[in-house]
View 1 (tube, rainbow, N blue to C red):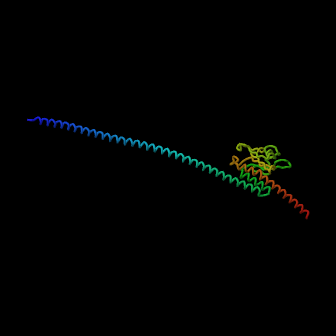
View 2 (cartoon, rainbow, N blue to C red):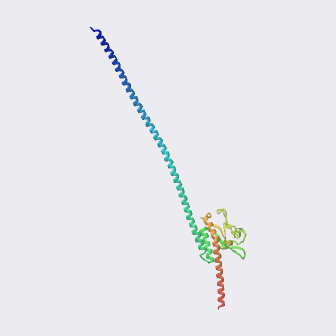
View 3 (spheres, helix red, strand yellow):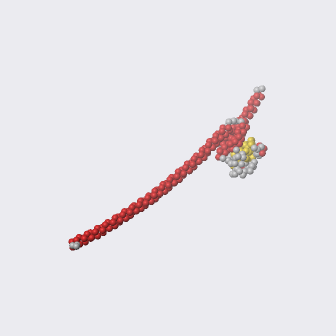
Length: 274
Protein backbone atom coordinates (compact mmCIF):
# COMPACT_ATOMS: atom_id res chain seq x y z
CA UNK A 1 0.00 0.00 0.00
CA UNK A 2 1.35 3.32 -1.06
CA UNK A 3 2.21 5.72 1.60
CA UNK A 4 1.68 9.39 1.54
CA UNK A 5 5.38 9.90 0.87
CA UNK A 6 5.22 7.64 -2.14
CA UNK A 7 2.24 9.45 -3.47
CA UNK A 8 3.98 12.82 -2.98
CA UNK A 9 7.12 11.61 -4.72
CA UNK A 10 5.07 10.25 -7.62
CA UNK A 11 3.21 13.54 -7.92
CA UNK A 12 6.46 15.50 -8.05
CA UNK A 13 7.81 13.13 -10.68
CA UNK A 14 4.71 13.65 -12.77
CA UNK A 15 5.08 17.42 -12.42
CA UNK A 16 8.74 17.19 -13.41
CA UNK A 17 7.86 15.09 -16.43
CA UNK A 18 5.22 17.61 -17.43
CA UNK A 19 7.70 20.45 -17.04
CA UNK A 20 10.33 18.49 -18.97
CA UNK A 21 7.82 17.66 -21.68
CA UNK A 22 6.79 21.30 -21.97
CA UNK A 23 10.49 22.29 -22.04
CA UNK A 24 11.15 19.79 -24.76
CA UNK A 25 8.18 21.05 -26.72
CA UNK A 26 9.31 24.66 -26.24
CA UNK A 27 12.83 23.73 -27.26
CA UNK A 28 11.47 22.07 -30.39
CA UNK A 29 9.43 25.15 -31.17
CA UNK A 30 12.52 27.34 -30.65
CA UNK A 31 14.53 25.13 -32.97
CA UNK A 32 11.83 25.19 -35.61
CA UNK A 33 11.53 28.96 -35.29
CA UNK A 34 15.29 29.26 -35.47
CA UNK A 35 15.30 27.12 -38.57
CA UNK A 36 12.54 29.23 -40.10
CA UNK A 37 14.43 32.40 -39.31
CA UNK A 38 17.62 30.98 -40.79
CA UNK A 39 15.77 30.08 -43.95
CA UNK A 40 14.31 33.58 -44.10
CA UNK A 41 17.74 35.06 -43.65
CA UNK A 42 18.99 32.93 -46.54
CA UNK A 43 16.08 34.11 -48.66
CA UNK A 44 16.81 37.73 -47.80
CA UNK A 45 20.51 37.29 -48.55
CA UNK A 46 19.71 35.67 -51.90
CA UNK A 47 17.27 38.43 -52.71
CA UNK A 48 19.87 40.99 -51.71
CA UNK A 49 22.50 39.41 -53.95
CA UNK A 50 20.02 39.26 -56.80
CA UNK A 51 19.14 42.91 -56.32
CA UNK A 52 22.79 43.88 -56.16
CA UNK A 53 23.42 41.91 -59.38
CA UNK A 54 20.62 43.70 -61.11
CA UNK A 55 21.81 47.07 -59.83
CA UNK A 56 25.36 46.29 -60.88
CA UNK A 57 24.20 45.24 -64.31
CA UNK A 58 22.20 48.44 -64.59
CA UNK A 59 25.19 50.54 -63.53
CA UNK A 60 27.41 48.68 -65.99
CA UNK A 61 24.85 49.26 -68.74
CA UNK A 62 24.78 52.96 -67.92
CA UNK A 63 28.55 53.10 -67.99
CA UNK A 64 28.64 51.29 -71.34
CA UNK A 65 25.97 53.60 -72.74
CA UNK A 66 27.93 56.63 -71.61
CA UNK A 67 31.13 55.21 -73.10
CA UNK A 68 29.36 54.47 -76.38
CA UNK A 69 28.17 58.06 -76.49
CA UNK A 70 31.71 59.27 -75.86
CA UNK A 71 33.04 57.05 -78.63
CA UNK A 72 30.29 58.21 -80.99
CA UNK A 73 31.21 61.82 -80.22
CA UNK A 74 34.88 61.07 -80.76
CA UNK A 75 34.02 59.36 -84.05
CA UNK A 76 32.02 62.40 -85.19
CA UNK A 77 34.89 64.67 -84.22
CA UNK A 78 37.36 62.48 -86.14
CA UNK A 79 35.05 62.35 -89.16
CA UNK A 80 34.66 66.11 -88.97
CA UNK A 81 38.41 66.53 -88.90
CA UNK A 82 38.77 64.13 -91.83
CA UNK A 83 36.26 66.22 -93.78
CA UNK A 84 38.19 69.36 -92.91
CA UNK A 85 41.45 67.75 -94.04
CA UNK A 86 39.80 66.58 -97.28
CA UNK A 87 38.50 70.10 -97.90
CA UNK A 88 41.96 71.50 -97.18
CA UNK A 89 43.47 68.95 -99.57
CA UNK A 90 40.96 69.91 -102.25
CA UNK A 91 41.73 73.56 -101.63
CA UNK A 92 45.47 72.86 -101.85
CA UNK A 93 44.95 70.83 -105.04
CA UNK A 94 42.88 73.62 -106.56
CA UNK A 95 45.43 76.19 -105.53
CA UNK A 96 48.22 74.02 -106.93
CA UNK A 97 46.42 73.81 -110.27
CA UNK A 98 45.92 77.58 -110.21
CA UNK A 99 49.59 78.14 -109.45
CA UNK A 100 50.57 75.75 -112.24
CA UNK A 101 48.25 77.63 -114.56
CA UNK A 102 49.74 80.93 -113.44
CA UNK A 103 53.23 79.59 -114.06
CA UNK A 104 52.20 78.44 -117.53
CA UNK A 105 50.61 81.81 -118.17
CA UNK A 106 53.74 83.63 -117.04
CA UNK A 107 55.83 81.37 -119.25
CA UNK A 108 53.55 82.07 -122.20
CA UNK A 109 53.68 85.81 -121.52
CA UNK A 110 57.46 85.70 -121.31
CA UNK A 111 57.74 83.71 -124.54
CA UNK A 112 55.33 86.05 -126.29
CA UNK A 113 57.23 89.12 -125.06
CA UNK A 114 60.56 87.60 -126.05
CA UNK A 115 59.30 86.66 -129.51
CA UNK A 116 57.90 90.12 -130.13
CA UNK A 117 61.29 91.71 -129.55
CA UNK A 118 63.37 88.99 -131.24
CA UNK A 119 63.29 90.59 -134.65
CA UNK A 120 63.17 93.98 -136.33
CA UNK A 121 61.63 92.66 -139.52
CA UNK A 122 58.16 94.18 -139.89
CA UNK A 123 56.59 91.14 -141.58
CA UNK A 124 58.06 88.79 -138.99
CA UNK A 125 56.68 90.94 -136.17
CA UNK A 126 53.20 90.79 -137.72
CA UNK A 127 53.55 87.02 -138.10
CA UNK A 128 54.59 86.63 -134.45
CA UNK A 129 51.61 88.70 -133.30
CA UNK A 130 49.35 86.55 -135.47
CA UNK A 131 50.74 83.34 -133.94
CA UNK A 132 50.31 84.71 -130.41
CA UNK A 133 46.68 85.64 -131.06
CA UNK A 134 45.95 82.22 -132.59
CA UNK A 135 47.85 79.95 -130.22
CA UNK A 136 47.67 81.78 -126.90
CA UNK A 137 44.38 83.67 -127.15
CA UNK A 138 42.53 81.25 -129.40
CA UNK A 139 41.21 83.64 -132.04
CA UNK A 140 40.17 82.33 -135.46
CA UNK A 141 39.24 85.50 -137.34
CA UNK A 142 41.00 88.78 -136.59
CA UNK A 143 42.94 91.66 -138.09
CA UNK A 144 45.87 93.87 -137.14
CA UNK A 145 45.10 97.47 -138.06
CA UNK A 146 47.55 100.38 -138.11
CA UNK A 147 46.87 104.09 -138.09
CA UNK A 148 47.87 105.98 -141.22
CA UNK A 149 48.65 109.42 -139.88
CA UNK A 150 48.41 110.95 -143.35
CA UNK A 151 44.80 109.85 -143.91
CA UNK A 152 43.96 109.55 -140.18
CA UNK A 153 42.48 106.10 -140.89
CA UNK A 154 43.00 102.66 -139.44
CA UNK A 155 43.80 100.09 -142.12
CA UNK A 156 44.32 96.31 -141.91
CA UNK A 157 47.93 95.29 -142.48
CA UNK A 158 47.53 91.62 -141.53
CA UNK A 159 44.53 89.29 -141.18
CA UNK A 160 43.73 85.72 -140.19
CA UNK A 161 40.61 83.87 -141.36
CA UNK A 162 39.64 86.96 -143.35
CA UNK A 163 40.67 88.66 -146.54
CA UNK A 164 42.36 91.96 -145.92
CA UNK A 165 39.92 93.61 -148.32
CA UNK A 166 37.00 92.42 -146.13
CA UNK A 167 38.15 94.64 -143.26
CA UNK A 168 37.08 98.22 -144.01
CA UNK A 169 39.23 101.23 -143.20
CA UNK A 170 37.99 103.16 -140.18
CA UNK A 171 38.29 106.88 -139.52
CA UNK A 172 40.03 107.78 -136.28
CA UNK A 173 37.31 108.32 -133.65
CA UNK A 174 34.47 106.72 -135.66
CA UNK A 175 32.61 103.55 -134.58
CA UNK A 176 33.87 100.98 -132.12
CA UNK A 177 37.33 100.63 -133.67
CA UNK A 178 37.86 104.35 -134.20
CA UNK A 179 36.70 105.14 -130.67
CA UNK A 180 39.09 102.56 -129.18
CA UNK A 181 41.95 104.13 -131.15
CA UNK A 182 40.94 107.56 -129.89
CA UNK A 183 40.37 106.65 -126.22
CA UNK A 184 43.12 104.04 -125.88
CA UNK A 185 40.68 101.83 -123.93
CA UNK A 186 40.06 98.17 -124.82
CA UNK A 187 36.61 97.00 -125.90
CA UNK A 188 34.98 93.61 -125.17
CA UNK A 189 31.47 92.39 -125.95
CA UNK A 190 29.49 91.37 -122.85
CA UNK A 191 28.48 87.92 -124.15
CA UNK A 192 30.99 86.13 -126.36
CA UNK A 193 28.58 83.25 -127.06
CA UNK A 194 25.84 85.42 -128.55
CA UNK A 195 28.11 87.69 -130.59
CA UNK A 196 27.34 87.95 -134.32
CA UNK A 197 30.32 88.91 -136.55
CA UNK A 198 30.22 92.54 -137.63
CA UNK A 199 33.19 94.15 -139.40
CA UNK A 200 32.33 97.53 -137.91
CA UNK A 201 31.83 96.18 -134.37
CA UNK A 202 34.31 93.42 -133.50
CA UNK A 203 34.06 91.05 -130.55
CA UNK A 204 37.28 92.50 -129.12
CA UNK A 205 39.22 95.62 -129.98
CA UNK A 206 42.60 96.22 -128.33
CA UNK A 207 44.48 99.48 -128.91
CA UNK A 208 48.13 99.13 -129.87
CA UNK A 209 49.80 102.02 -128.11
CA UNK A 210 53.18 103.28 -126.95
CA UNK A 211 52.51 105.03 -123.66
CA UNK A 212 49.44 107.09 -124.60
CA UNK A 213 50.10 107.24 -128.33
CA UNK A 214 47.90 104.77 -130.25
CA UNK A 215 49.43 103.42 -133.47
CA UNK A 216 46.77 100.84 -134.32
CA UNK A 217 44.37 98.19 -133.03
CA UNK A 218 43.91 94.43 -132.84
CA UNK A 219 40.34 93.48 -133.76
CA UNK A 220 38.92 89.98 -133.15
CA UNK A 221 35.74 88.74 -134.84
CA UNK A 222 35.66 85.02 -134.01
CA UNK A 223 37.23 82.59 -131.53
CA UNK A 224 38.29 79.02 -132.17
CA UNK A 225 35.52 76.45 -131.67
CA UNK A 226 36.98 75.12 -128.40
CA UNK A 227 37.23 78.64 -127.01
CA UNK A 228 33.93 79.72 -125.43
CA UNK A 229 35.09 82.61 -123.25
CA UNK A 230 38.12 84.63 -122.26
CA UNK A 231 40.28 83.62 -119.30
CA UNK A 232 42.32 85.88 -117.06
CA UNK A 233 45.48 85.08 -119.01
CA UNK A 234 43.77 86.35 -122.18
CA UNK A 235 43.30 89.79 -120.66
CA UNK A 236 46.95 89.72 -119.57
CA UNK A 237 47.93 88.83 -123.13
CA UNK A 238 45.75 91.65 -124.45
CA UNK A 239 47.54 94.03 -122.09
CA UNK A 240 50.89 92.70 -123.29
CA UNK A 241 49.88 93.06 -126.91
CA UNK A 242 48.63 96.58 -126.32
CA UNK A 243 52.11 97.67 -125.28
CA UNK A 244 54.74 95.19 -126.45
CA UNK A 245 53.21 94.49 -129.85
CA UNK A 246 52.89 98.23 -130.49
CA UNK A 247 56.54 98.77 -129.53
CA UNK A 248 57.68 95.85 -131.70
CA UNK A 249 55.65 97.12 -134.67
CA UNK A 250 56.85 100.68 -134.24
CA UNK A 251 60.50 99.61 -133.89
CA UNK A 252 60.32 97.30 -136.90
CA UNK A 253 58.71 100.01 -139.03
CA UNK A 254 61.38 102.49 -138.03
CA UNK A 255 64.04 99.93 -138.81
CA UNK A 256 62.44 99.07 -142.16
CA UNK A 257 62.15 102.78 -143.02
CA UNK A 258 65.78 103.38 -142.03
CA UNK A 259 66.86 100.36 -144.06
CA UNK A 260 65.01 101.66 -147.09
CA UNK A 261 66.50 105.11 -146.62
CA UNK A 262 69.95 103.65 -146.13
CA UNK A 263 69.50 101.55 -149.24
CA UNK A 264 68.38 104.64 -151.17
CA UNK A 265 71.34 106.66 -149.93
CA UNK A 266 73.70 103.82 -150.73
CA UNK A 267 72.24 103.56 -154.19
CA UNK A 268 72.59 107.29 -154.71
CA UNK A 269 76.22 107.15 -153.53
CA UNK A 270 76.89 104.26 -155.89
CA UNK A 271 75.59 106.37 -158.76
CA UNK A 272 77.83 109.25 -157.75
CA UNK A 273 80.96 107.12 -157.49
CA UNK A 274 80.60 105.45 -160.82
